[in-house]
Length: 70
Image 1 (cartoon, rainbow, N blue to C red):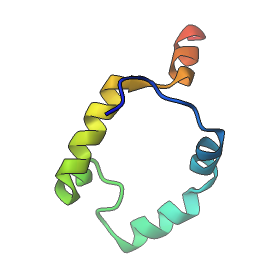
Image 2: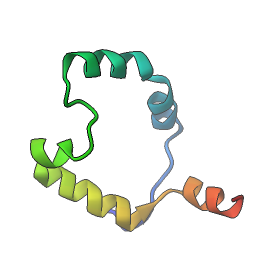
Image 3: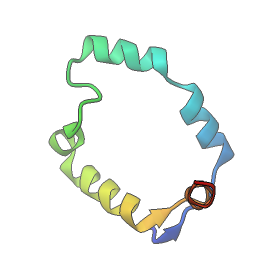
């Protein structure tokens, strides 16, 4: 489990921002439960619990920058 600052990855952040809208629209058209809140707990509770703890205990340097310029 990671505690503290996450190491930024430019490659992953670009991938996350460019892969997207069309793919999500297709998935939500096929699966009515896709993207709904709480579905992670139903499909894979162990992973959902891990992700919840991970997101609460780690942070990105970009989060710090955002807070500084708010």
